[in-house]
Structure formats: C-alpha cells, structure tokens
Amino acid sequence: NPKIIAPINDNGHVTYLPLNDTEAMKAELAKGDVCAVIIEGIQGVGGIQLPTSEFMQALRQACDEHNAVLILDEIQSGYGRSGKFFAHQYTGIRPDIITVAKGIGNGFPMGGVLISPKFTPVYGQLGTTFGGNHLACAAAIAVLDVMKEENLVENAALVGTHLIEELKKFPQIKEVRGRGLMIGMEFSEPIKEIRQQLLFEQKVFTGVSGTNVIRLLPPLCLSMAEADEFLSRLHAVLK
Image 1 (spheres, rainbow, N blue to C red):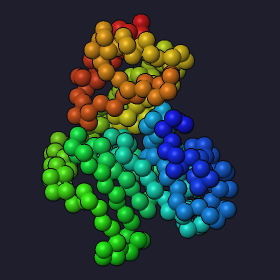
Image 2 (image 1 turned 60 degrees about the vertical axis):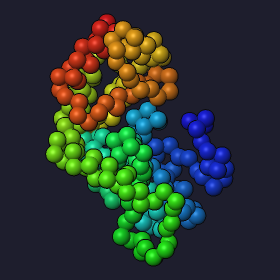
Image 3 (image 1 turned 90 degrees about the horizontal axis):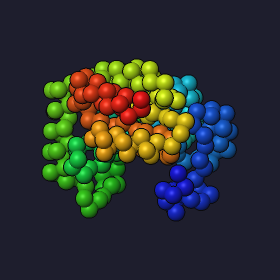
Image 4 (image 1 turned 120 degrees about the horizontal axis):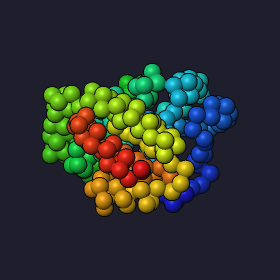
C-alpha cells in the first residue's frame, strides 16, 4: 500500500517483490547486495495472503546461500493468531529474527524482537529509553500464562478451522483465506455496504483490507457458539 510506505523505505535501498514468486526472490538475492529479507508469516494489511511452504523454504535456503538475514514479521500473525504460536511454523522454517507486538501484551503497548543464537550479543550493544519496562514484562508474562491455561492457541486452530470451512460454503464469497483466527473473505464487489450492515444492523465489527476483502481477527478465546452466531449474522446480511 503506497500510502503507508515510510519515506525511508520509498527509495532504492528497498526492493518490493511479489509474494510467492520464487524466481524473482532468487534473482534479487543472487545480486549479493541484500542485507535482509522481511516477510510476514501471513500478510495482514495485504489481504490475508499466505506464503506457501515451498516459497518459504526456498527463501530460507536462498538467504543462507547469500548471507542475508531472514526476518519474520509476526506482529499480526504471531502469538497464536494462526493456530500455531507463529504462522511461519506451518512452513517448517526457522527465521533469524522474529518481530512481535500487538498480542504480546493483550492491549498493553509492548513490542519485542526475538534473535537467533547465530547472532553473538555483545554487552552494551543495545540500549533503549523504554527497554526493560517492568510493567510491560509483567503484562506479557501474564498473557502467556493465560494463553497456556486456557489453551488459546489450540482454540484458535479449532474455531478458526470451523469458521473457514463454513465460510467457504457461502456462494457470495469469492475466496476465503487464512489460518486460525486470521481470516480474509474476498468478494467480487466492494464490501463497504456489507461491513456497514454487519455493524449497524447485526452489531458485528469487522476489519478490512483494500476495497474487496473483509478481515476477521476475533479474540483467541472466541467460542464455537460465538463463531456460529457470527456465521448466522453474516448469512442474514448476505442473503
């Protein structure tokens, strides 16, 4: 989305490539001047687009061959959202760096970076004004405790699979994409009116990506009954 590309990235230092285009990726890395590759576990704002396992495995191999760092942006797709703790785990790879935020504090503002053991840390290497925030760390630990106690990752996988299977039965929906409770519904027509009816008539709030995709990102504690209630209200609008 050109509107949200930061000026620092809108220059020759950054190359944008099509998702799942293995040949384009290999050609770019073969130039030998790539510092790092950044990719989402599942594209969020991009419309709930999934990288294939074949692409991700080829990307991991190419980054190793050309000494490029593989960075997985799991800010939206991580922390159980996809039905696994991280969405890239579906593809069987291990990245070098993982970025996390959003779900990490369940609303309390916090972000984190997970770094592979391949990087040797040096004392005094990193410093930040807001680093080591004790309250944020306590919140993050509490979130992990609840996720474990209430089996929220497993619930996201179970309820999400049910939602995706049922949504695929709606003839009005062109395509259903996603994993767990990170779901995109693509329509042939703009979805502005559908979202308004869902909100004002059915009291259901949904997300959006572009003009034709509705994004579903419900809480990981969504029950099967609540999922069915949503399906019922969506049916009432689409019929």
